Length: 588
Image 1 (cartoon, rainbow, N blue to C red):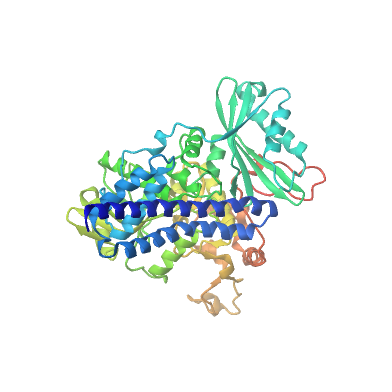
Image 2: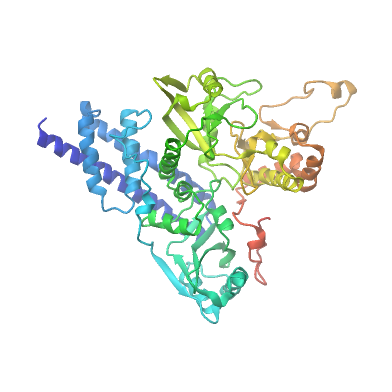
């Protein structure tokens, strides 16, 4: 083929990849736009289906383009010179696009699948580790501005009425008074409400599960910025303000790595990430991209951040602190707050799951409401690290116990498949070292974590303390998924009473136990809590150790009852207005 034909072919392929991304993005936004109607009609069941459909969309479009390229290029599908030209043309086609990092990630996903790339191929991928894409963004996303004068209720009323919904407001003046009251409380230490000059809100409403969120910032007359997120609920009588988040810590939870992806129909995303980062300066941009539903870009940014750190650090990978896992080999780099998890070749007794089961459990978590209690695990393939960066004992363990997944090539350790998660302190280690009051609060939150998971139809399976971790803010998170299952798939039974002394003394169960049978009364015997901690758990969450609690939970899920764990505390919520038939839900 002559040079002009090659150039034409490269340009055609570059255009097809660009158009493929835009088609994917168009479908992504179309699904996202359904969120408003789901919210107004309180159609939560189909809202969950939308969330799964949107998650699956990326691979659908990448695979579609890969199939097209294989057909179009035929025996030249691995022609590197041609692909260098395709990449160059692609760069030219997207240079004026604000979210060009998304399209670059899409391009790299395609080349990795075409070439089965091990590690990173800098010639065929966009992998500039020193690139920090949001630092190039100078424009602000579209904002609506609402001056706050005297009385402040006028500006607040204008704001709420601006975000009109087809079902109207349940009690607009009640919501106005509540929002003004919450602003007054927050600004009391900042000079009073008279120091507040305006509220700036993103024009796009954010949706997550059963709530809608107006996201923005309160700007003082002196230029001071304070985060402001207004949570809205849909009731039978109309929309109502449900909560007001004014602290960075509370807003950070909404955009956290244990939360479900947000549905927000954004024309461009990078500029919104810049704004969110301005009110949440400590939040990694990888997490912001991910919670906005751009999971692949979140992976790209996490990889960039870690690879930069690896280049500028010298410590070695070590086995992660905590008890050795039967299913996963877990390691970490002490100077960076993530862990790497590789599925072992064989699982020790009494584990009965197989590799496919573990993969399916992680996919289940990926596509469900994580309720603030399940860590977001990102899946990576064909990564490559220098073997000298591994502590000797760890390297020996990986080569001996995960040999189906890892191998040495020259000076590198190639890992076929692994998961990356935020590093947490294992709960058993935390309780051993924490001050008494902190340990007490962690035990209470451990019980609440199990309860929250049950509300979202998740039974952890293995409730041992070592399978839960504690965040920097003291929140308890579950991270061991190999025995996780749906509450509705379990058969929760009361423990039969022994009729004879011989039966009671039997080492094994003297009664029939089915594969799906669970006996909550037995939890108490293997949790591993110290007596004083067990007393705290029984006092605060004793019903979790009864079969009736779990049977009732299963019954409610079977009836398609929507049981949501909200990303904010009850103390931040508005009481129902006088005469309302709804009740206050949530917890502190």
